[in-house]
Image (cartoon, rainbow, N blue to C red):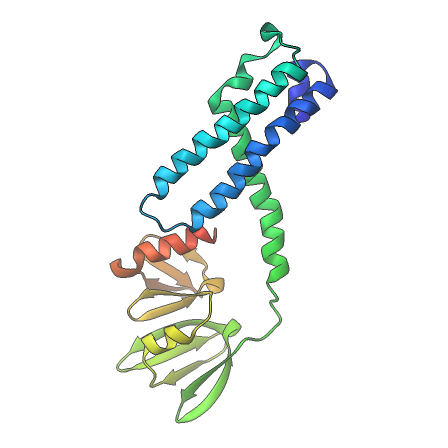
Length: 221
């Protein structure tokens, strides 16, 4: 952004000062959107409006300081686009998206140990068995039993799907009264189904909002 402002101001030092003064608003926008995505409040959209107004206020404070430091109180020397609220919101969103795509992605990758097994115990064929949850694609409830589909095999169990759902860790999503999916294996998503290993699994109305919220909050689709 410093180089963009240099073309407007004709100087690097002033452009650097201006870009620095506008960074606090972008940081507040990034932090605020992070909490907003996780919010389940019925007032979350009103909270978003408050966030946009507050960050705009912070940016205008920065522009007021820039008016004194960079433009030496000469209003005619100050490009009008710099006080345009749409421009300032786009500026903040640019850095918010840049941070999310670069730093958050690296953080998620560093925290995901794809080689470590997560062992989970089930009763199948009257025997207790340990399965690696990383290999579990999805679970289907059918004919008073459940079928656990793993990457290389499937297992049957007499446990109820509701009981399994209570024991599963984060990363498994109930999409239907008959299906639980491992979100790491999702290949495609539509309003009505989720695809795993070329299998289209239906999303019921009861779980649709929860599925959409989970995928949006975790930026999976």
